[in-house]
Amino acid sequence: MGGRMSEELDPRGHVLVPEHRVLSKEEGEEVLRRYRVKPHQLPLIKSSDPVARAIGAKPGDIVEIKRESFTAGRALAYRYVVEG
Image 1 (cartoon, rainbow, N blue to C red):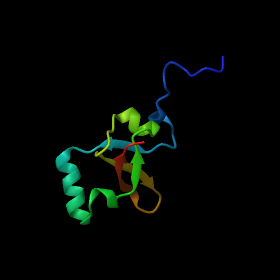
Image 2: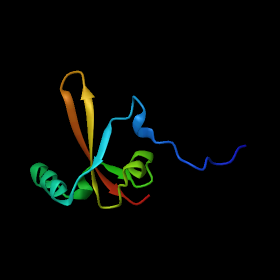
Image 3: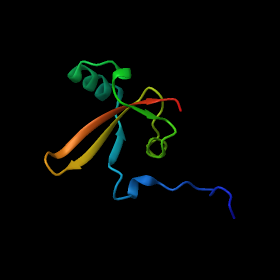
Image 4: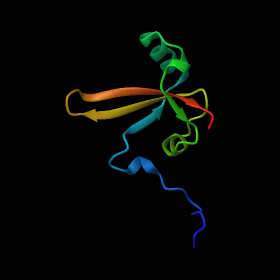
């Protein structure tokens, strides 16, 4: 024992992990226009993050995160994928 498991666990099924998805290039450009920001001004997520790996996010992608919110019902957040 003590070695790495041959298969990684997929964190997306956990109750505390919100829904993540990689936006298309067009969707990402629309998010940047809507918020009037450059990609590097978004919060970052490393490509090595377990959820980023599970959804196939690559550096340069923008990830949308859907969270359930007691006050807002649903809240969207965006992350820019960086190497790491």
